[in-house]
View 1 (cartoon, rainbow, N blue to C red):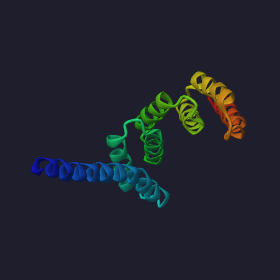
View 2 (view 1 turned 180 degrees about the horizontal axis):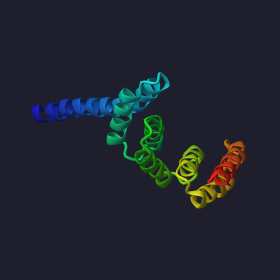
View 3 (view 1 turned 135 degrees about the horizontal axis):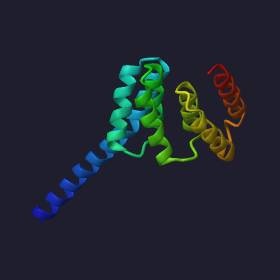
Length: 144
């Protein structure tokens, strides 16, 4: 009897602990996004990184980290995070768009053209951005 009671109590506390951990990890991304929207990039970065610790496949956290690094003008870190987003979801339109912009900035025109083609083949929400990218690419090529 006593052994059964101990098992029940232990199971109860373990289930509460698991619930708390899963609930907390869902809040990390949301808290990070709220801070990001308020332009508190350092604080939001902390929450996105915590979200990734609990959920290494959190493409949205990687995407927002890339946006933070874009603001901080840390091109290599931005690119690394965008590449990770595309590894997790090759059809993430926003990551493709941001990576194309970064490649225009780096004068990597061949890669930009490939990304514009990729965006064309997967676009659902950001199809209008394709022409914007093409204009930026053309103007960048002319100025070089």
